[in-house]
Image (cartoon, rainbow, N blue to C red; front, top):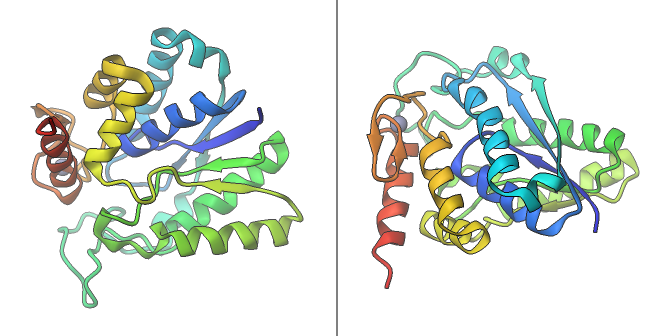
Amino acid sequence: MDRALVLFSGGQDSTTCLAWALDRFATVETVGFDYRQRHRVELEVRPRLLEAIRTGFPAWGQRLSEDHLLDLGVLGQVSETSLTRDMAIVAEQGGLPNTFVPGRNLLFLTLAAALAYRRGARHLVIGVCETDYSGYPDCRAATMSAMEQALNLGMEAEFEIHAPLMRVDKAGTWAMAAALGGAPLVELIRDETHSCYRGDRSHRHPWGVGCGDCPACALRANGWKAWEGRP
Ligand code: ZN
Protein backbone atom coordinates (compact mmCIF):
# COMPACT_ATOMS: atom_id res chain seq x y z
CA MET A 1 0.00 0.00 0.00
CA ASP A 2 1.35 3.30 -1.11
CA ARG A 3 0.80 7.01 -1.15
CA ALA A 4 -1.21 8.60 -3.99
CA LEU A 5 -1.95 12.13 -5.13
CA VAL A 6 -5.29 12.63 -6.90
CA LEU A 7 -5.86 15.55 -9.27
CA PHE A 8 -9.17 16.58 -7.77
CA SER A 9 -11.21 19.31 -9.44
CA GLY A 10 -14.51 18.72 -7.66
CA GLY A 11 -16.18 17.24 -10.74
CA GLN A 12 -17.85 13.88 -11.30
CA ASP A 13 -14.80 12.23 -12.85
CA SER A 14 -12.15 13.32 -10.38
CA THR A 15 -14.43 12.54 -7.42
CA THR A 16 -14.96 9.02 -8.78
CA CYS A 17 -11.17 8.74 -9.21
CA LEU A 18 -10.71 9.90 -5.62
CA ALA A 19 -12.97 7.07 -4.41
CA TRP A 20 -11.04 4.66 -6.66
CA ALA A 21 -7.76 5.79 -5.06
CA LEU A 22 -9.16 5.66 -1.51
CA ASP A 23 -10.16 2.08 -2.20
CA ARG A 24 -6.57 1.15 -3.17
CA PHE A 25 -3.94 3.28 -1.51
CA ALA A 26 -3.04 3.64 2.17
CA THR A 27 -2.72 7.41 2.03
CA VAL A 28 -4.36 9.69 -0.49
CA GLU A 29 -3.70 13.41 -0.93
CA THR A 30 -5.57 15.72 -3.30
CA VAL A 31 -4.55 18.67 -5.42
CA GLY A 32 -6.67 21.27 -7.21
CA PHE A 33 -5.78 24.17 -9.51
CA ASP A 34 -7.04 27.71 -9.70
CA TYR A 35 -6.44 28.66 -13.35
CA ARG A 36 -9.05 31.45 -13.32
CA GLN A 37 -11.58 29.04 -14.80
CA ARG A 38 -14.99 30.57 -15.38
CA HIS A 39 -16.51 27.70 -13.42
CA ARG A 40 -14.43 28.64 -10.36
CA VAL A 41 -17.36 27.50 -8.27
CA GLU A 42 -15.77 24.04 -8.58
CA LEU A 43 -13.10 25.27 -6.16
CA GLU A 44 -15.84 25.87 -3.58
CA VAL A 45 -17.36 22.40 -3.90
CA ARG A 46 -13.95 20.68 -3.37
CA PRO A 47 -13.68 21.20 0.42
CA ARG A 48 -17.36 20.28 0.87
CA LEU A 49 -16.82 17.00 -0.99
CA LEU A 50 -13.69 16.18 1.02
CA GLU A 51 -15.56 16.84 4.27
CA ALA A 52 -18.48 14.69 3.13
CA ILE A 53 -16.12 11.81 2.33
CA ARG A 54 -14.44 12.14 5.73
CA THR A 55 -17.74 11.99 7.59
CA GLY A 56 -19.78 9.72 5.30
CA PHE A 57 -17.13 7.10 4.50
CA PRO A 58 -15.07 6.62 7.69
CA ALA A 59 -12.76 3.92 6.26
CA TRP A 60 -11.85 6.23 3.40
CA GLY A 61 -11.70 9.22 5.75
CA GLN A 62 -8.82 7.58 7.60
CA ARG A 63 -6.83 7.37 4.36
CA LEU A 64 -7.70 10.82 3.10
CA SER A 65 -4.80 13.12 3.89
CA GLU A 66 -3.88 16.70 2.95
CA ASP A 67 -5.53 18.78 0.24
CA HIS A 68 -3.46 21.24 -1.81
CA LEU A 69 -4.72 24.13 -3.93
CA LEU A 70 -2.21 25.55 -6.42
CA ASP A 71 -2.45 28.93 -8.11
CA LEU A 72 -2.15 28.48 -11.87
CA GLY A 73 -3.32 31.94 -12.93
CA VAL A 74 -0.66 31.94 -15.63
CA LEU A 75 -2.74 29.40 -17.57
CA GLY A 76 -5.64 31.85 -17.72
CA GLN A 77 -3.15 34.52 -18.81
CA VAL A 78 -1.75 32.58 -21.79
CA SER A 79 -4.87 30.85 -23.06
CA GLU A 80 -7.83 32.32 -24.88
CA THR A 81 -10.57 29.76 -24.43
CA SER A 82 -14.20 29.74 -23.42
CA LEU A 83 -13.17 28.21 -20.08
CA THR A 84 -10.81 31.04 -19.21
CA ARG A 85 -12.46 34.02 -20.96
CA ASP A 86 -16.00 35.28 -21.24
CA MET A 87 -16.64 33.72 -24.68
CA ALA A 88 -19.35 31.56 -26.21
CA ILE A 89 -18.63 27.82 -26.41
CA VAL A 90 -18.08 26.96 -30.11
CA ALA A 91 -16.26 24.38 -32.22
CA GLU A 92 -12.91 25.59 -33.56
CA GLN A 93 -11.41 24.71 -36.92
CA GLY A 94 -10.12 21.18 -36.71
CA GLY A 95 -13.06 20.01 -34.63
CA LEU A 96 -11.90 20.80 -31.09
CA PRO A 97 -14.27 22.96 -29.05
CA ASN A 98 -12.86 26.20 -27.66
CA THR A 99 -13.30 24.73 -24.18
CA PHE A 100 -9.98 23.00 -24.83
CA VAL A 101 -7.30 24.72 -22.72
CA PRO A 102 -3.96 23.97 -24.44
CA GLY A 103 -1.40 22.54 -22.06
CA ARG A 104 -3.80 22.25 -19.14
CA ASN A 105 -3.35 18.60 -18.25
CA LEU A 106 0.36 18.75 -19.10
CA LEU A 107 0.85 21.58 -16.60
CA PHE A 108 -1.44 19.93 -14.05
CA LEU A 109 0.54 16.70 -14.19
CA THR A 110 3.91 18.45 -14.05
CA LEU A 111 2.93 20.43 -10.96
CA ALA A 112 1.22 17.43 -9.38
CA ALA A 113 4.39 15.39 -9.90
CA ALA A 114 6.55 18.13 -8.39
CA LEU A 115 4.24 18.18 -5.39
CA ALA A 116 4.13 14.38 -5.21
CA TYR A 117 7.95 14.34 -5.33
CA ARG A 118 8.05 16.47 -2.17
CA ARG A 119 5.25 14.53 -0.47
CA GLY A 120 6.71 11.09 -1.23
CA ALA A 121 3.74 10.00 -3.35
CA ARG A 122 4.53 7.67 -6.25
CA HIS A 123 1.03 7.35 -7.70
CA LEU A 124 -0.66 10.15 -9.62
CA VAL A 125 -4.37 9.66 -10.29
CA ILE A 126 -6.17 11.70 -12.95
CA GLY A 127 -9.76 11.51 -14.26
CA VAL A 128 -8.99 11.81 -17.96
CA CYS A 129 -10.95 9.77 -20.46
CA GLU A 130 -10.54 9.26 -24.19
CA THR A 131 -13.95 7.75 -24.91
CA ASP A 132 -15.91 10.99 -24.55
CA TYR A 133 -14.89 14.52 -23.60
CA SER A 134 -14.82 16.16 -27.02
CA GLY A 135 -11.58 14.46 -28.10
CA TYR A 136 -9.22 16.58 -25.99
CA PRO A 137 -5.75 15.39 -27.00
CA ASP A 138 -4.38 15.83 -23.48
CA CYS A 139 -6.88 13.24 -22.19
CA ARG A 140 -5.60 10.40 -24.35
CA ALA A 141 -3.73 7.31 -23.16
CA ALA A 142 -0.78 8.10 -25.45
CA THR A 143 -0.40 11.53 -23.83
CA MET A 144 -0.54 10.02 -20.33
CA SER A 145 2.08 7.45 -21.20
CA ALA A 146 4.39 10.10 -22.70
CA MET A 147 3.89 12.35 -19.66
CA GLU A 148 4.72 9.51 -17.31
CA GLN A 149 7.94 8.91 -19.20
CA ALA A 150 8.85 12.61 -19.31
CA LEU A 151 8.18 13.09 -15.59
CA ASN A 152 10.20 10.02 -14.63
CA LEU A 153 13.11 11.01 -16.86
CA GLY A 154 13.03 14.67 -15.84
CA MET A 155 12.66 14.06 -12.10
CA GLU A 156 14.55 10.78 -11.94
CA ALA A 157 11.49 9.27 -10.33
CA GLU A 158 9.19 6.27 -10.63
CA PHE A 159 5.80 7.88 -10.88
CA GLU A 160 2.87 5.86 -12.10
CA ILE A 161 0.05 7.78 -13.73
CA HIS A 162 -3.30 6.08 -13.18
CA ALA A 163 -6.28 7.05 -15.34
CA PRO A 164 -9.03 4.68 -14.16
CA LEU A 165 -11.64 6.29 -16.44
CA MET A 166 -9.53 6.25 -19.62
CA ARG A 167 -11.83 3.86 -21.48
CA VAL A 168 -14.97 4.33 -19.39
CA ASP A 169 -17.89 6.36 -20.70
CA LYS A 170 -20.01 8.62 -18.50
CA ALA A 171 -22.55 5.87 -17.78
CA GLY A 172 -19.67 3.62 -16.78
CA THR A 173 -18.37 6.34 -14.46
CA TRP A 174 -21.68 6.33 -12.55
CA ALA A 175 -21.51 2.53 -12.44
CA MET A 176 -17.99 2.71 -11.05
CA ALA A 177 -19.11 5.10 -8.30
CA ALA A 178 -21.96 2.72 -7.41
CA ALA A 179 -19.56 -0.23 -7.25
CA LEU A 180 -17.07 1.67 -5.08
CA GLY A 181 -19.34 3.47 -2.64
CA GLY A 182 -22.91 2.36 -3.30
CA ALA A 183 -25.90 4.70 -3.29
CA PRO A 184 -24.34 7.14 -0.77
CA LEU A 185 -21.41 7.83 -3.11
CA VAL A 186 -23.66 8.13 -6.17
CA GLU A 187 -25.84 10.62 -4.29
CA LEU A 188 -22.84 12.61 -3.07
CA ILE A 189 -21.44 12.81 -6.62
CA ARG A 190 -24.84 13.64 -8.11
CA ASP A 191 -25.67 16.38 -5.62
CA GLU A 192 -22.32 17.94 -4.71
CA THR A 193 -19.86 17.60 -7.60
CA HIS A 194 -19.64 20.30 -10.24
CA SER A 195 -19.27 19.75 -14.01
CA CYS A 196 -21.05 22.70 -15.64
CA TYR A 197 -18.73 24.88 -17.74
CA ARG A 198 -20.92 27.90 -17.02
CA GLY A 199 -20.47 27.52 -13.27
CA ASP A 200 -24.25 27.24 -12.76
CA ARG A 201 -25.12 25.93 -9.28
CA SER A 202 -28.76 27.09 -9.29
CA HIS A 203 -30.55 24.59 -11.56
CA ARG A 204 -31.11 21.12 -10.11
CA HIS A 205 -31.72 18.14 -12.42
CA PRO A 206 -32.05 14.37 -11.85
CA TRP A 207 -28.32 14.07 -12.72
CA GLY A 208 -27.08 16.97 -10.60
CA VAL A 209 -26.71 20.74 -10.71
CA GLY A 210 -25.85 22.85 -13.77
CA CYS A 211 -27.14 24.98 -16.64
CA GLY A 212 -28.35 21.86 -18.47
CA ASP A 213 -27.17 22.74 -21.97
CA CYS A 214 -23.41 23.31 -22.00
CA PRO A 215 -21.31 20.37 -23.33
CA ALA A 216 -20.28 19.28 -19.81
CA CYS A 217 -23.91 19.23 -18.59
CA ALA A 218 -25.05 17.40 -21.74
CA LEU A 219 -22.39 14.72 -21.30
CA ARG A 220 -23.23 14.28 -17.63
CA ALA A 221 -27.00 14.14 -18.26
CA ASN A 222 -26.65 11.60 -21.08
CA GLY A 223 -24.40 9.40 -18.97
CA TRP A 224 -26.84 9.48 -16.09
CA LYS A 225 -29.77 8.54 -18.35
CA ALA A 226 -27.81 5.69 -19.94
CA TRP A 227 -26.75 4.37 -16.52
CA GLU A 228 -30.23 4.67 -15.00
CA GLY A 229 -31.72 2.89 -18.01
CA ARG A 230 -29.50 -0.14 -17.62
CA PRO A 231 -31.13 -3.35 -16.50
ZN1 ZN B 1 -23.71 23.54 -17.90
